[in-house]
Length: 158
Image 1 (cartoon, rainbow, N blue to C red):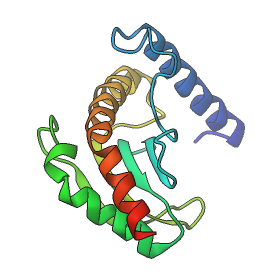
Image 2: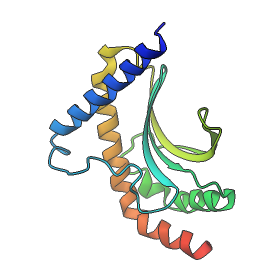
Image 3: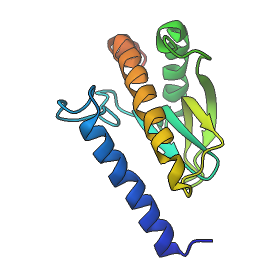
Image 4: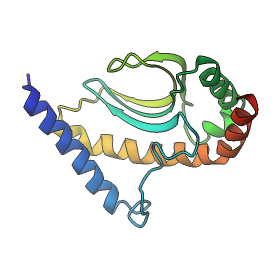
């Protein structure tokens, strides 16, 4: 078991090393901002990384507190499922309801997962980093193809 301070240091080390890995990755090293993440230009839509003791995930998250608008966004994305899942061999996991354990906030998530990896196992970090980079680049590219449509449909339903 790690103490609270040791776990914080481990997490900090992980993300710092990931940032360094991104800085030298051929597809990322010349980009000012490596990933879009929360800068999607659509309120309450974000791209996220998640890592814990069991898995790593690359996530497109809809976190509007207004359930009707959140579900509308999910519905629009479902219409463009083929575009969003392009390049993902096994597709993506579509979760219209997820409650964040840290805040209790209800969100919709669309993600890909790498099972049986553990943040606490440093020897697995290179595989996790590769998974994160490869899948976030795909998810971003696919999302950007439908971002304007999603934004327009959400603005029309607001």
